[in-house]
Length: 110
Image 1 (tube, helix red, strand yellow):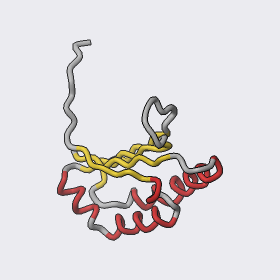
Image 2: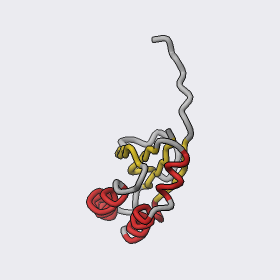
Image 3: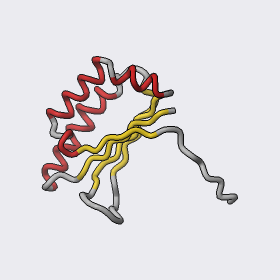
């Protein structure tokens, strides 16, 4: 499993945040969902920022079977279309993007 994570920071105003989230959910996510090799998409609203700035608003976690599937998906026209859309709705200026490898799971013995 390989994951691609995007954090979106809070836009300058509440109106801008509402517009971005509406466009993100109605236009961007359907395009992302068409990416070949994508097996799962998780979207979470940030409910509270404990430390750090700028404050994040949304976190998206896109899961692929492995690094090859992610690489191939990111080379697809569907991925390119979702990237163009993200630029159109103003998301590129708000985004920090990174990939994660397999998680290390700690057994807490509980």
